[in-house]
Length: 498
Image 1: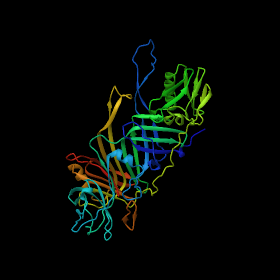
Image 2: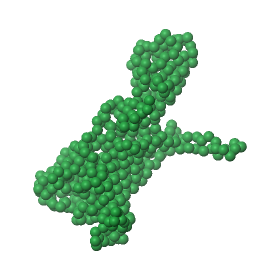
Image 3: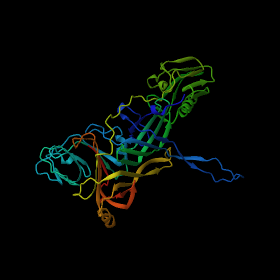
Image 4: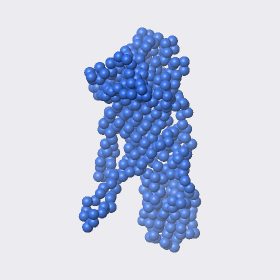
C-alpha cells in the first residue's frame, strides 16, 4: 500500500540528553511544515585501500552517522501575545536561548523618543529585545532595546513619538544568540503518511536558519538540521517494558531486553532473540515481518509459553511494545503478535491557526538611530549559519560523545530601489560604518500593529559587506549585503515575537 505525503505530520521535542529521542507527549508538540521537506539518513563512508589483485573497488565500511533534515515554516507568531508558536523549539535551537515576558510593563512619565522609562519591571528586558510600544494616540511602534539602566530602556532606533505614561510595551517571546555553544538539542519525528513510516532524527541542531521576504509573497522561514542519530520505525523499550517471562523445555525463565530506543524493529527482534536465547537451554528465535508488521517468537524445544499475564514481571512486560496483548501465549512453539505495529502519530496535532504573514505594509529600518524611515525594499533575506563541531569519543557507542556550536555567522541581503541622488549607502560601505538593521512584520489594523502577530528581527551592529546596483524589470536596484558582527562579546542577532 502506498503512503500519501500530504497526510504526514511532524512533532518536535526538546531533548534532555543529547541524541536520546524524547517522544511526543501531547498535541501541542506538532508543527505544520510545508511540502518539500526532507529527512535524510546518511553515514560517512570509509574506503579500504587494501590491494586485492583487482582494480575494482572493495566493500566500503560505514563510519559516523550524519543524518540531516530540511524543513520550511511560514514565519509567523502564535497569534497570542506572550505565547510561543508551534515551531518554537526550532527558533530556540537556531539562536540558542529564549526568554518569555508574560507580564506587560507600562511606561512612566518623561519617556522620550530614544528612552522608554518604565514604571517597573526593567529587569524583564535584555539588550536586543523588541518592544511593541502601544501608543494609541500616535500609533503602535516596534523598536529594540540597546541598554538597560534599572527601569530605563535606551533604544537602538528612535521612536517617531515619545509615549505618555501608562503605555504598554507588549509581551515578548524573545530569542537571543547564545555564545556558550551548548545549545539545546531536538528530536524531529516525521510520521510519513501518518502511519506509513516513522522517521526520527535525534541530537538535532539547527545549522542554518533563514527568513525570506519578497514583496507580496508569504514571509517564509527555513531550517537545516544536522543530527547524530536516525531511526526508522523505532521502538522505545524502557525499564517498565523490558521483560519477557516464558517457559521453555526446562522451566520458567525471564529474559531482560536492554532499555533503549531501537533503530528499527529488526534491531529489537535481534535483541529479544539474544535475551531469550541466552536465558534458555532451547534455541529461541525472534523475527520481524515488514508485510504483517508483526513479531514472531519460536523455539526448537518441547515447550514454549509466553507468560505475559502471569509471569513475575507482568507489570513490566514487553508485550504491548511488540504487538502482543497482555495475555499468556501457550500450547504452541511459535507465536506471532496479536496486532500489527502502528507508526501513526499518538496524538491529533494542534497547530497555531493565525494567518500567514505577507510581505506588504511591513517595515525595514536600515542605518542610524535617528533614521527610521522604511527602507524601500523588494526582497529581504536574513541568514544565520551555525557551525556544529562533533565531540569525538572512541568510548561512545556512536563514536560521538556530543556536539556543540563552535561558530556563528549572520548575514542580510536587501534589494531596494535606487532613488535619484541616493549616495549614503555607498558612503557607509566605503567607510565601513557600523549600522543597525531591523525588519518588523506582522498584521496591522488601522495602521497599528496587532499584538500576537508581530515578528521583530534585529541586528544592532552590522557593516555593509557588498554594494552594487542592479536591474529589476527595467528599474535600477540598490543591492546591499550586510554582515552582522559582535562588539565586546555582546550578541549580534535577536528575534522577538510581540
